[in-house]
Amino acid sequence: MKILLAYDGSECADAAIQDLKRAGLNDEVEVLVMSVADVFVPDPINDNGFPTYVPMAIRRAHEHGRNELEQAGVLAGRASEQIRSLFPNWRVSYQAEADSPAWALILRADEWKPDLVVMGARGLSVFGGRLIFGSISQRVLYEVRCSVRIARGPGRDTDRPIRILIGVDNSPDSNAAVAAVCNRNWPAGTEVGLLVVVDTVMPVVPNPSEPAVMKWIEVGDENKWDEVREIFEPSAQQLRNAGLHAEVLIRRGNPADQILEEAHTWGADCIFVGAKGTRGIDRLLLGSVSSAVSARAHCSVEVVRPAKYLRNGGQS
Image 1: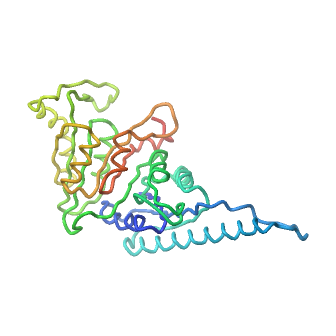
Image 2: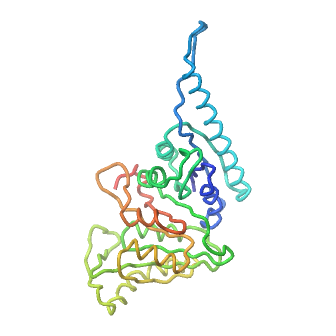
């Protein structure tokens, strides 16, 4: 597994590193730590052997850019050492760049093709010197073609079993979220809740091999919820076969609100949700539910993109 980890020296970035211990990752991991100095570095001054007058403002810009880039390198190196101490079997490298932070991360993800991008919920210091979610984390979340984990510090006793909430709707994206959880190495006792949020009708894919074929069933009456539970029981059994305790939870209301509320009351350590694809463009845009959950959750959130988007360059 390849992980691109954004690091800016903030408490949230340090929390993202600690959060990796509860992300179900094995020893076969390669991590690239990336710190980005939000500065413009002018082209090098080259006098070609002849004395050249360089305005003081230009010299100061060069000096400022070099200092910021050096600081970013120090931060990235410190983070890589922290990761090595936690995961001695991982392959860890780091790099620093001077660029717009969000686009630097997006471009690096396009080039390096990680399976997962990990970021803190908010950043400061090198990433623009301000507290931000929307301008960097949300932009990266929208634009990269792989899964993204927005990490937040633990909100409860870390000695207790890990609790994972998966928002499911029978779509290929939510099925990918279930598969992502199944493919991790979780400690014994890990609990998983498959949360289905219903309204009055619900779309169902009768044949997973034909996701374009869909039917609708009435679910407004709670007496119909047994039928809903049966639809998602195979996913729950898939998780049980992976050694996890899993159950199907059904709630009524706005999907994002219900996922957030259930995660809070149930004490989830992480929410897994699928991202929504948009056909006809070369990137995967985020659905409204995934966007709201990733921005507002009290715990870590992993937005899962199906592996097919990595194979075919992001086409839906």
